[in-house]
Length: 397
Image (cartoon, rainbow, N blue to C red; front, side, top):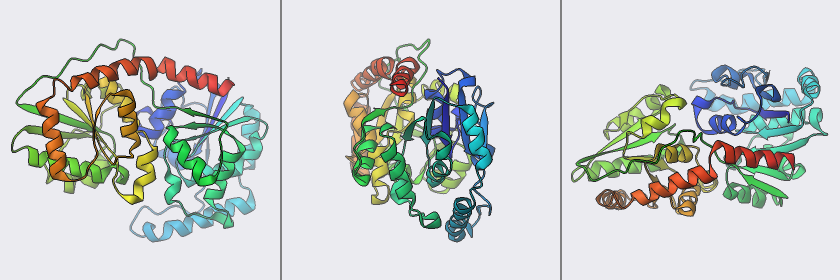
């Protein structure tokens, strides 16, 4: 099976989230059977990880470069409209279309991580009109998108992608339901496909017992759809530290830490640095609990409701208790409750969160039941073999 992935992101296993998931789900393929089409900008920032770094085609939507400064906040929307309009009117992708036709892939997976991903699909779709096409959405970034290049709404383009190709890959059933309702579409098939992990040589988790000091770790970026809930947890830990000593450590990139450190250092949150994916599970296993957060704000409501975060399965492999803070409708909470593999805190009142955390640590040994359930579900539902086999069957049907 030859697969063409069209995206505005990359397939870099060390970048987490969207990129890590794309990389892991397609590792069953012979590298010569996967072709990646991505933006020149995404490729430059984050080149694909081996073995998917050889067969890559790039496109450049930035006739006028995006501004990464203070002016960008005001100018980039206008710049994007000019860039996309120019591409739409002048069809600047004839060479790329020809290259795609010559690849003659069996399956095309369109995985947009923003408006550019949907826009480039519009420009290239004629090159694979006779192929099986599968949309793959991991977040509801569309909720906040208003872009209308050349008078064509990104929402209209997304609806066309989803309507014309009714076999959907989605990060969760929740997200599929959100998009189906918004665009009045009834998909024929939906495969909820989440980040798989390699369980070769995995050992049962070592239980955490009562102690005088605990460590909670968080891995990944602190985007706006995570940060308000993370701050609630940090403030609650600061309150609880008067009774129970708890370290909160964040493993993320230097740039992400620099963005957030002013608020976090005042709460004694520690920076653990960026950990390569090959080392992340053993690093997280040194903590006692692992934190995941989803926003309580209305602005990020559909993101919290629709997106199961990539880090959950990596946390399960680390074999430590998962603590999730977010609203009652959080997709993370749906996952943890469905598989009985973590503790959910569903309030952003810091005093109530502190009380919930105190209860967790006072019963830390009983809470290891969640860890054991997580270990079992990881091996039966989210291993490379299981997830990739489901994907293979879905694409082949």
